Image (cartoon, rainbow, N blue to C red; front, side, top):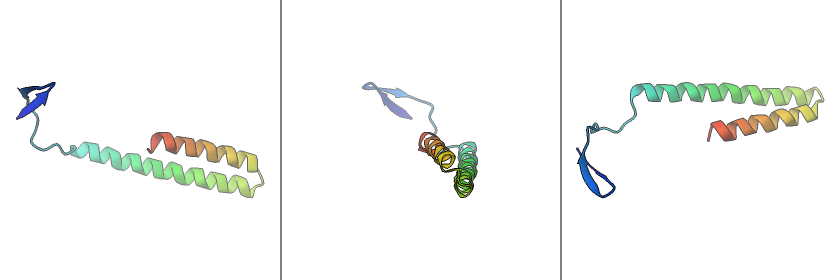
Length: 74
């Protein structure tokens, strides 16, 4: 297969299919499952601490959970 690099055409050994290998898709599935579990745990922790009357702690947990998801899920 021919490929252009900086204006020059060079031969490369790339596969015709650029699809992700099966292991890569499998890793994404597990990462999504971990994010789901952490998300459910974070939301339930906020609800439980708010019901207990610990609103400041609930807010802190919510902020850290949101920061985690903005960093890891996006």
